[in-house]
Amino acid sequence: MIRLLEMVETLGLENLHAPHAKHIEGKLWELRAKASGGIARGLYVTTTGRKVVILHVFVKKSQKTPSKALDIARNRMKEVLS
Image 1: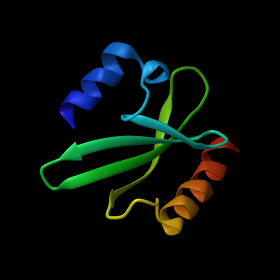
Image 2: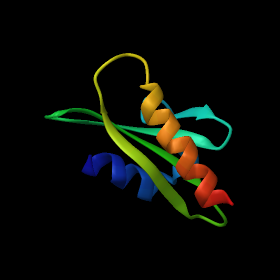
Image 3: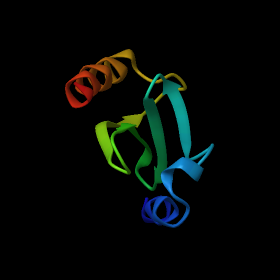
């Protein structure tokens, strides 16, 4: 996880690509991190300037991103961007 954050700091989020970052839909993106406890995902959105808001973090247990996690992130994104 620390290595991923160092990459974001060094390269910039806009230059981070698969397998570390993935576009989900619209302004919603996914940040991927592997750790000894499993694979963590953070759904985020960028706002004015270089501000990043992490909307929801979860441990991924299957290939598909859980619809509940996406719903939580979408609702929070509406609040943040309005």
